[in-house]
Length: 52
Image (cartoon, rainbow, N blue to C red; front, top):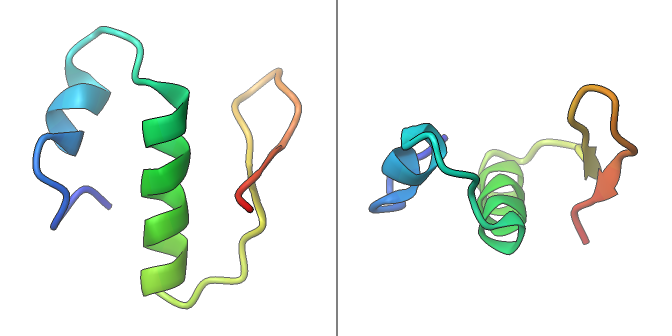
């Protein structure tokens, strides 16, 4: 998922929280580039977040 997005892997696994705007954009870019029919992402225990 982080291929082609320099620095994104490091942000995800640095131990610090990733900026939610950056996270949402990265997930949305992955969904669009792979033609997936995903409209939301969701963390355990939280409400779904729309991608658009």
